[in-house]
Image (cartoon, rainbow, N blue to C red):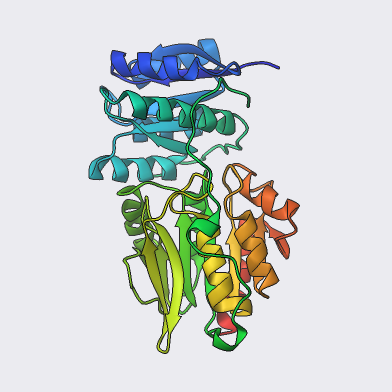
Length: 362
């Protein structure tokens, strides 16, 4: 098996060395070169033909967003953005994903050795996933086994919400749509929400992103959609024409009372190594809304959401998995299909059409 070739682009020599050392821990990855800015990177891409690029956002001579936009026209390839956990970094990263980057990862503080060990594990996983992703050429600019490493305990949704049979007598009859995604999901969600009519049933969304990034993502999609899209707050009511995005680093659960749906924000441990977790929101929707819900699992690596989608299906909900051809990474949808959790397997345009028709029935 050929190793995955990676080119690291970052203006910091220290960061280039740290990224290179992190990726060198995998037997399946080879760092073929580094570059301190996009102009040097262009020459090295031609000479070295890397499979994956890691790219800093703030660099001299050309910023990362501009470079991704140009790269997706001239030479499409998987790009992982390396971002700082700041408001500016979050906003820029969302724009880079919109421009065509496949994924991103947060850069730890240089003096935090434990954080860098976790970062190395995550970066390797993202590179391995990105190497198999589908990258499409943009016609016009748009805005495996690894060495043993310590990983956090993998919890299921039981740690947040016990699994139980739906309480049919208490189920609400209001329609609701639940969407879960990871790698490649930001642009699919943006495409879906920007195509839906204004009078849709309430929508709850879990996209694997850290804090600050979910707000930047929700704010950006809100400007593109006829729906009111925002990062969810604890106890917030969910109405028609509204989409709530789970806040980064916190779980979101659907709740209800006599006046309708609202969301609970939960600080419990990561589920399937994710917080927010798709399994958590799907399970809560299965228990609260039952057959009055629609569940949609989109592109992403791993299996988070597959079990939850099955619980939604068993509760009587309609369930959709994105098809392989239109998925950037066919991990989460594949696992849902394997479990028999999906009533339907559809591409993005068909998903939009189905959700629109579903909303018009309410």
